[in-house]
Image 1: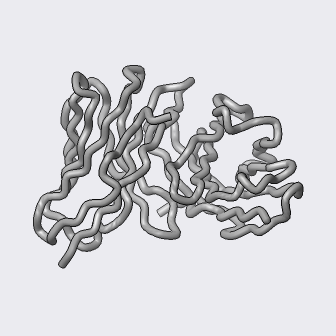
Image 2: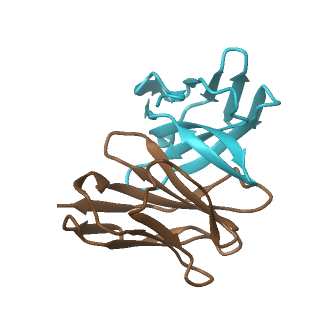
Length: 114
Length: 114
């Protein structure tokens, strides 16, 4: 069964450093998403991406965040200058055209900012 | 921001009995509702959904009920099995350019005892 994969599973970085979280969505999917879940809190939408551009973003997705689909398979989330409060699980998800409500999530990357 | 609320952080049920997980929402613009299941160290997995034009959707042991006037939905699992033990997230979506942007509740941890 096709699945969304994410690397790395755990990333530790120092405050102020840049990090890139990587995702490989399901190959025939068209919509791509990033979410985060701070420990003990709910899953929060960050950004959606379609047709090589951002289609929607939340208030959390400020100028320090960017997304890119550099080739036909990868979908990345870059955090330019990490802050302590960026520590969270980051989930990538993708969905197809016919049932775009059904999003398939990756296993997540745990980001720890020290 | 409490647009989607799951007021019970945990639920304990005996194997074979019915599990009922509840969810309330406040935004009338939501037009699609979903339940996700999450095991530790994994991303959320889509379980079942319901459109705002319906009041019930059934898939095997899982049934979702929607009461639009009360802005309430529930997930019934019958019969409950130990493998159902997980965190269940309710999500309410609005369409945005063909994709669905979900707002998640905080989750209910279901424990099914053998």
